[in-house]
Image (cartoon, rainbow, N blue to C red; front, side, top):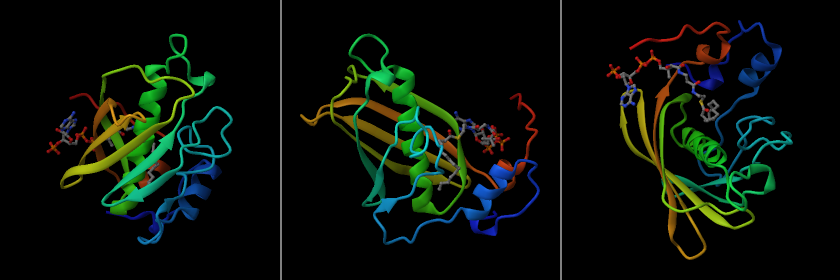
Length: 175
Ligand SMILES: CCCCCCCCCCCCCC(=O)SCCNC(=O)CCNC(=O)[C@H](O)C(C)(C)COP(=O)(O)OP(=O)(O)OC[C@H]1O[C@@H](n2cnc3c(N)ncnc32)[C@H](O)[C@@H]1OP(=O)(O)O
């Protein structure tokens, strides 16, 4: 399994190549985790449409505080379910720092237990439930200020080699 620090050339996209070359897993002691890249929809500080999620290590997992805003509206005053899914998928992506592996979402399942309100503080938590070879089984919650869980999520991330990000042609996989 190639790690990100083994960055190789071969992409036809210079931005991808730069990201691969610059990517490093942070030191295990640092609680603040860096964005996946500056333009990441979930956490990139340079993406004007993004959520700018700021994530820290917490025990074996990760956590974040987040407010959805008017850019993420679905029904009036309520965050769009897709926006919530985006944030959870990205939060799961931060667990990869804790295992030092590159991986991508293969399956994401969300239970929307109560509306996620705009301009309201929430606490997000995620952890690795189990690892089975290259399969990472992940779990997350979103809870409000009253410690009520409003959303739960599970995901299967699959560990991939760095070449996954350098390959410009991916064939659909029919099961
Ligand atoms: C640290 C940070 C790092 C940064 C990382 C990058 C930035 C991240 C940014 C974060 C952004 C957020 C993150 C993002 O947005 S990631 C972006 C969204 N995700 C993708 O683009 C991934 C697209 N998919 C693929 O490329 C391929 O399908 C991959 C590579 C994932 C797998 O294709 P591959 O052909 O290799 O594998 P497989 O399909 O044969 O399956 C393999 C195994 O899995 C088992 N299986 C399948 N489904 C299920 C299921 N539902 N329950 C239980 N098991 C299931 C299956 O039976 C098999 O098992 P086995 O037979 O081997 O035992």
